[in-house]
Image 1 (cartoon, one colour):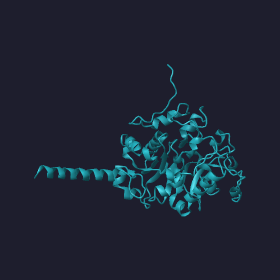
Image 2 (tube, one colour):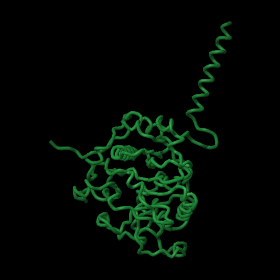
Image 3 (cartoon, one colour):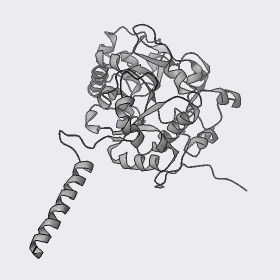
Image 4 (cartoon, one colour):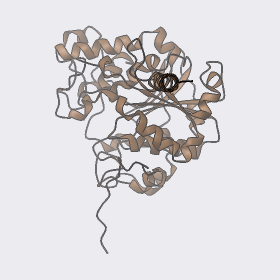
Length: 356
């Protein structure tokens, strides 16, 4: 065999290898920016884990951008550490954070969990987000990932739990997953007008704090401005019913309308992803047990709850400005217990300066 022939064979082998690599790692056809990443354990049993007929697995959805990704890891670890049941994690991240979160998980004990990582496509919410208030963080596209769950996970037809990335779960997540929804209800949320969490906010916790009742489209709905608001950072929902009732399209309608006229956002409660869900799920949701959602831990830097309340809470939520990975967060010692350091050192919690 001549030298030229050997070179051609070698080049051919290299070309096949290169094309295979490009196929696996670069954007796929039909506009998909990246293949979803599934853990090896999940991949081996993906047909079982994602089957709508599976009754034992608890399906948990978490979403995070690059600024809150450490929170998502801690939330995931807290669930994994405190449940004896089979859990399938469905993680939503920004498109350029996929590799980061995969490396993070595979370098920690969370490599033993079942999970998939899917990038959120920003074009889904392009020109649909307008925050009238000064809280620009509410315009982050990942805040709206919860609107698109059936689109992100088309194989999930039954129940899922969506949890914000600034939460720690101290109870067995299966207990929340097995709660009963009232007949005709698609989802369950935590109401803000009762329970211990009510005392920790200056808001009156009703619809008029979030929705502009002068808007003609709102007036046609005949909503009660004094109706109690609810928190969307924790949600139990049936994705099959979500899709059947066109919930995503209804949420997107109010998002789009708000960019053209003020529907929500100038009110005290602020804009973001909560008001559209309050409109769509008005008086049509089941209440979550208060111990499963102790929230507003991020409203102030000072301690708002007694040690006893925090210890017995089954889910803690640092809703507000003071996140548990930042300098002034209250009860950050609980969050620290579940945080797994970033092996790439891109995410580092900020802590109070210690004095000797």
